[in-house]
Length: 113
Length: 116
Image (cartoon, rainbow over all chains, first blue to last red; front, side, top):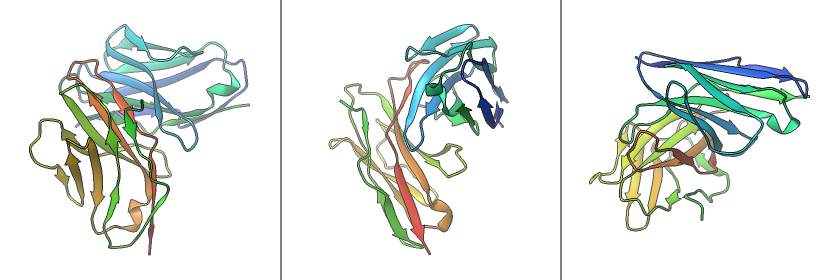
C-alpha cells in the first residue's frame, strides 16, 4: 500500500532563516505531488505541484520554492522566511490520471518568530 | 466566482443522528470529480468519498454518502449515525478535467461538532 511521509511535524523558525520541508511517498511510482498551505481555520491553498522529476508548477507568487529531485521526493524550501510564511503545510500525492483522490501527509506546523 | 462553496456555519448534530453538509460547485468542464475530506483537530486530511461527474449513482462509503445533484451543481455529504469521532472540519473539493496536471480546488470547510 502507498504511504506518504512528511517531516518535521512541528517547526519554529526565526524570521530570515532558511526552510526545508521534505515529503516522500512509498508504494507507488510517478505520482503527482503537491504542496498546500492552510492558514488557521481556513481552507487549503495550493502552492506547488509536480507531475514528474524536475517539473514544478507554481500556483502563487511567494517566498517559497519547491523541488523534486527524485520521483517520490518533494521538497519545499525558502531562503529567507517571512512572518507571513507561518501556517500548516501539507504534502499530498495522487495518481496521474482520471479523478483519483489526493492523499495527504500529516502536515507540518510552521511558526515564524 | 468561487469554484467550491461551503456556506454553512458550524454544524451541530446529536450522536447517532444523520447530518448533511452542503457543497455547491461551479465548473464548465463536463469532466470533473468531487471529493470530501475530513480534517480532525490533529490536522491530517483524510479522504472520505468521491463522485465522478459521469457517475449515474450517488457514491456511498460506509456511513458516508454523497447526494449528487448535477443540475443544481451540488454535492452534499451525508453522514449517518454520527459518532463523537466525526467531530472535525469537512472540506469539499473538485478536480476539473482528467489530465495528469488537473488540480484540486478546496472549499473553506465546515466545522461539525457531534454532541453526546
